[in-house]
Image (tube, rainbow, N blue to C red; front, top):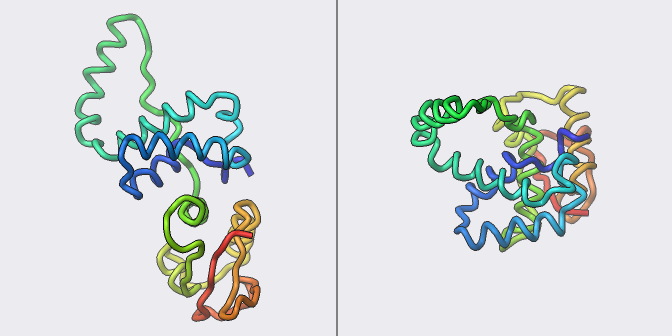
Length: 177
Protein backbone atom coordinates (compact mmCIF):
# COMPACT_ATOMS: atom_id res chain seq x y z
CA UNK A 1 0.00 0.00 0.00
CA UNK A 2 3.02 2.27 -0.36
CA UNK A 3 1.36 3.87 -3.38
CA UNK A 4 -1.30 5.37 -1.07
CA UNK A 5 1.21 6.97 1.32
CA UNK A 6 1.72 10.72 1.37
CA UNK A 7 4.43 11.63 -1.11
CA UNK A 8 5.84 15.16 -1.57
CA UNK A 9 4.02 15.76 -4.87
CA UNK A 10 0.58 14.86 -3.46
CA UNK A 11 1.09 16.90 -0.30
CA UNK A 12 2.30 19.84 -2.43
CA UNK A 13 -0.88 19.55 -4.49
CA UNK A 14 -2.91 19.88 -1.27
CA UNK A 15 -0.80 22.83 -0.09
CA UNK A 16 -1.30 24.67 -3.39
CA UNK A 17 -5.03 23.89 -3.46
CA UNK A 18 -5.40 25.41 0.03
CA UNK A 19 -3.49 28.58 -1.02
CA UNK A 20 -1.29 28.46 2.08
CA UNK A 21 1.16 31.23 2.87
CA UNK A 22 4.77 30.33 3.64
CA UNK A 23 4.41 30.32 7.45
CA UNK A 24 1.15 28.38 7.29
CA UNK A 25 2.74 25.93 4.84
CA UNK A 26 5.72 25.26 7.13
CA UNK A 27 3.49 24.91 10.20
CA UNK A 28 1.22 22.54 8.26
CA UNK A 29 4.16 20.40 7.08
CA UNK A 30 5.54 20.13 10.61
CA UNK A 31 2.14 19.12 11.96
CA UNK A 32 1.55 16.70 9.08
CA UNK A 33 4.89 14.97 9.59
CA UNK A 34 4.25 14.61 13.32
CA UNK A 35 0.49 13.84 13.36
CA UNK A 36 0.16 11.80 10.14
CA UNK A 37 3.54 10.04 10.33
CA UNK A 38 1.98 6.63 9.72
CA UNK A 39 0.80 7.85 6.28
CA UNK A 40 4.17 9.29 5.17
CA UNK A 41 5.85 7.31 2.39
CA UNK A 42 8.48 4.97 3.90
CA UNK A 43 11.32 6.57 1.95
CA UNK A 44 10.71 9.84 3.86
CA UNK A 45 10.02 8.48 7.35
CA UNK A 46 13.55 8.98 8.61
CA UNK A 47 14.19 12.25 6.82
CA UNK A 48 11.75 15.06 7.64
CA UNK A 49 14.03 17.67 6.08
CA UNK A 50 14.02 15.87 2.72
CA UNK A 51 10.24 15.43 2.84
CA UNK A 52 9.59 19.10 3.64
CA UNK A 53 12.18 20.24 1.08
CA UNK A 54 10.59 18.20 -1.70
CA UNK A 55 7.07 19.36 -0.79
CA UNK A 56 8.28 22.95 -0.97
CA UNK A 57 9.96 22.28 -4.33
CA UNK A 58 6.82 20.72 -5.83
CA UNK A 59 4.51 23.41 -4.46
CA UNK A 60 6.74 26.12 -5.94
CA UNK A 61 6.90 24.17 -9.18
CA UNK A 62 3.10 23.93 -9.38
CA UNK A 63 2.76 27.64 -8.82
CA UNK A 64 5.58 28.76 -11.18
CA UNK A 65 5.68 25.83 -13.60
CA UNK A 66 6.19 27.93 -16.74
CA UNK A 67 9.10 29.93 -15.29
CA UNK A 68 10.83 26.86 -13.87
CA UNK A 69 10.39 24.91 -17.11
CA UNK A 70 12.06 27.76 -19.02
CA UNK A 71 15.01 27.84 -16.61
CA UNK A 72 15.58 24.08 -16.52
CA UNK A 73 17.83 23.84 -19.62
CA UNK A 74 20.11 26.58 -18.25
CA UNK A 75 20.32 24.91 -14.84
CA UNK A 76 21.04 21.54 -16.48
CA UNK A 77 23.83 23.12 -18.54
CA UNK A 78 25.35 24.62 -15.37
CA UNK A 79 25.34 21.21 -13.71
CA UNK A 80 26.96 19.60 -16.77
CA UNK A 81 29.69 22.26 -16.79
CA UNK A 82 30.50 21.20 -13.23
CA UNK A 83 30.64 17.57 -14.29
CA UNK A 84 27.41 16.69 -12.48
CA UNK A 85 24.23 15.13 -13.76
CA UNK A 86 20.82 16.72 -13.13
CA UNK A 87 17.96 14.30 -13.59
CA UNK A 88 14.79 15.75 -15.05
CA UNK A 89 12.72 12.69 -14.34
CA UNK A 90 12.14 13.14 -10.61
CA UNK A 91 9.46 10.81 -9.39
CA UNK A 92 6.06 12.42 -9.60
CA UNK A 93 3.15 10.84 -7.85
CA UNK A 94 1.98 7.86 -9.82
CA UNK A 95 -1.28 7.47 -7.97
CA UNK A 96 -4.59 7.28 -9.77
CA UNK A 97 -6.99 10.19 -9.58
CA UNK A 98 -9.36 8.23 -7.36
CA UNK A 99 -6.45 7.52 -4.95
CA UNK A 100 -5.59 11.21 -4.97
CA UNK A 101 -9.21 12.11 -4.19
CA UNK A 102 -9.18 10.08 -0.97
CA UNK A 103 -5.73 11.34 0.06
CA UNK A 104 -6.90 14.95 -0.41
CA UNK A 105 -10.19 14.14 1.32
CA UNK A 106 -8.35 12.91 4.42
CA UNK A 107 -6.07 15.96 4.47
CA UNK A 108 -9.06 18.31 4.02
CA UNK A 109 -10.97 16.68 6.87
CA UNK A 110 -7.99 16.67 9.23
CA UNK A 111 -6.43 20.06 8.41
CA UNK A 112 -9.01 22.38 6.86
CA UNK A 113 -11.15 24.60 9.01
CA UNK A 114 -14.82 23.88 8.91
CA UNK A 115 -16.61 20.60 8.51
CA UNK A 116 -15.08 17.32 9.52
CA UNK A 117 -16.87 15.51 6.73
CA UNK A 118 -17.67 15.75 3.02
CA UNK A 119 -20.94 14.82 1.34
CA UNK A 120 -21.56 13.92 -2.27
CA UNK A 121 -23.50 11.55 -4.48
CA UNK A 122 -21.66 8.45 -5.56
CA UNK A 123 -22.60 9.26 -9.17
CA UNK A 124 -20.90 12.67 -8.85
CA UNK A 125 -17.70 11.11 -7.53
CA UNK A 126 -17.59 8.53 -10.30
CA UNK A 127 -18.46 11.04 -13.03
CA UNK A 128 -15.80 13.49 -11.86
CA UNK A 129 -13.13 10.83 -12.36
CA UNK A 130 -14.46 9.56 -15.68
CA UNK A 131 -16.35 6.49 -14.50
CA UNK A 132 -19.93 5.75 -15.53
CA UNK A 133 -20.46 2.69 -13.39
CA UNK A 134 -18.84 0.70 -10.63
CA UNK A 135 -16.60 -2.15 -11.68
CA UNK A 136 -15.20 -4.79 -9.38
CA UNK A 137 -11.72 -3.28 -9.81
CA UNK A 138 -12.96 0.24 -8.98
CA UNK A 139 -14.94 -0.99 -5.97
CA UNK A 140 -11.86 -2.80 -4.70
CA UNK A 141 -9.67 0.30 -5.11
CA UNK A 142 -12.19 2.55 -3.36
CA UNK A 143 -12.46 0.05 -0.50
CA UNK A 144 -8.65 -0.06 -0.20
CA UNK A 145 -8.49 3.75 -0.07
CA UNK A 146 -11.26 3.96 2.53
CA UNK A 147 -9.51 1.39 4.71
CA UNK A 148 -6.03 2.88 4.31
CA UNK A 149 -7.10 6.46 5.09
CA UNK A 150 -9.57 5.35 7.83
CA UNK A 151 -12.53 6.98 6.11
CA UNK A 152 -16.05 5.94 6.96
CA UNK A 153 -19.01 6.15 4.57
CA UNK A 154 -22.51 6.82 5.82
CA UNK A 155 -25.91 7.57 4.37
CA UNK A 156 -28.36 10.07 5.82
CA UNK A 157 -28.86 9.56 9.56
CA UNK A 158 -25.29 8.32 10.08
CA UNK A 159 -26.25 4.87 8.79
CA UNK A 160 -23.01 3.15 7.74
CA UNK A 161 -23.01 1.99 4.14
CA UNK A 162 -21.00 0.00 1.66
CA UNK A 163 -20.12 1.83 -1.57
CA UNK A 164 -20.59 -1.41 -3.50
CA UNK A 165 -24.24 -1.85 -2.53
CA UNK A 166 -25.72 1.66 -2.37
CA UNK A 167 -27.52 3.37 -5.24
CA UNK A 168 -25.57 5.71 -7.50
CA UNK A 169 -27.75 8.66 -6.48
CA UNK A 170 -27.45 8.10 -2.72
CA UNK A 171 -25.82 10.97 -0.84
CA UNK A 172 -22.73 9.69 0.97
CA UNK A 173 -21.05 11.31 3.94
CA UNK A 174 -17.31 10.70 4.17
CA UNK A 175 -15.78 11.18 7.62
CA UNK A 176 -12.85 9.80 9.59
CA UNK A 177 -13.28 6.72 11.74
